[in-house]
Image (cartoon, rainbow, N blue to C red; front, top):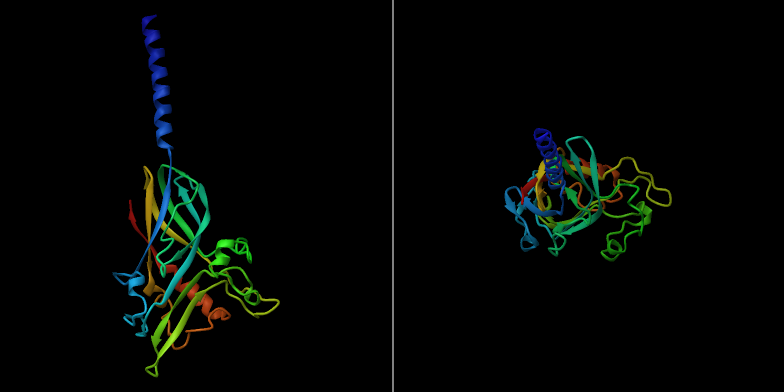
Length: 256
């Protein structure tokens, strides 16, 4: 009888002990994405702007005058293949050093995630003209004749052209559009998903995302600023090239 009672108590302790461990294992925590920017191995901030000191893969000498871009749709994929979507978006503004970190309202459970990802830009169904007052106020809209919605990126600067003159460029990313006007058509989606890889979360976490700015000009298309410099928004071929080069721009940095 004493042995039976002992085994019963031991069973209860085991059950409640496991339950406590399980609660600890799924503790919801806060996630923050922070964004840093590099040209090759050199950090870039707005203190580096307006200076013709960068050379791209095409040997164009250029400066950065404005850089801001939109990320949305953060997803965590667990080891069972289940995906947790954190809603919201963030307009990263390197020019003004604002929104360099983003903390979604939703929390996420601790554990191992085999992939963390986000979208560069907005999905088509979210890219609704004039839908976001803060983006409207930031002059982030795309003209209706180009399909409306919002930019994915505004990257502006100057470069030294083949005539040895300083010329401006506007490397702007939007949804690729053909036949601009009242009935634009869209040949290809140009928002894209950035996969950062596996991460283990045990407490509140800050995930650093690195933008390698030189990659916009490098891979797989070596960007010639003398050919593509301005009026890129109504140019679907240029938008598709931007989409292709963007695939290697972002990588996972430090995890704190």
